[in-house]
Image 1 (cartoon, rainbow, N blue to C red):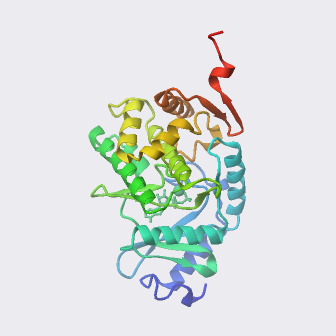
Image 2: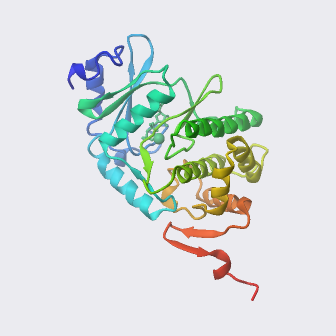
Length: 305
Ligand SMILES: Nc1ncnc2c1ncn2[C@@H]1O[C@H](COP(=O)(O)OP(=O)(O)O)[C@@H](O)[C@H]1O
Ligand SMILES: [Mg+2]
């Protein structure tokens, strides 16, 4: 990497340390990553920490060559899955989107490209990943429901800024000590053919499912799934998005291969949560099996005749 690539942008991190982190990750691949080796098994990138000269911690996010294979598999899996119309971008597009979103949403934090090596350098957000907060047995249920509201609220703010996330799950969200929510990881994009409203609706659906499956059992935080869905809908509040979800949702039966995307630990819970979302939405049972076949549940299982 050449020094001038990042000089004057994130100046508190030395060029040689960035270079070292990138070199270190070059042959990394999650195919060989054992469960438990890392707290967050993520499939599309490698993240290395670097201490800055200003005593802040910085992260360099890299997509090493072997990860193109992950990206390809992930896109195949997306194509098969009920989460339609999303794709992982190529390195250049990914970097542009990720850096642009991070800078615009968090102008007080440093972030930049390391153009030459296709890496993303950003300040580390001091906090916990939402999934960890929601799963923690040390955190009060009332605090968890506040966190859920804040997540919905932050997603709404993002949408109001004319942005969408692409993969708003509980691993792509960080909660700091003051309860402030930061959405991260903008490397998935929706199909251009979707309208902005549709993109927002797809985001909100993903948030709903990901929050529900953070709990191994329904009722774990003293609220049934329908109550959690209700507070997310209430907090998000945009009637146009809500009615689109009610009319046309991608659930249920999102393929089991997407379980990681939603950061779920249990397949049974994964389907139960989808079922509960459909149940909440009530009258509309457009089963979109694996994203390929649209048919009316009532037509197939018409018990009235
Ligand atoms: N700016 C950041 N501050 C703190 N933690 C971060 C930051 N960016 C990423 N992380 C951590 O690294 C994990 C993986 O990063 P992410 O950008 O989601 O990569 P991936 O695309 O591989 O999922 C996140 O779940 C989070 O725990
Ligand atoms: Mg992620």
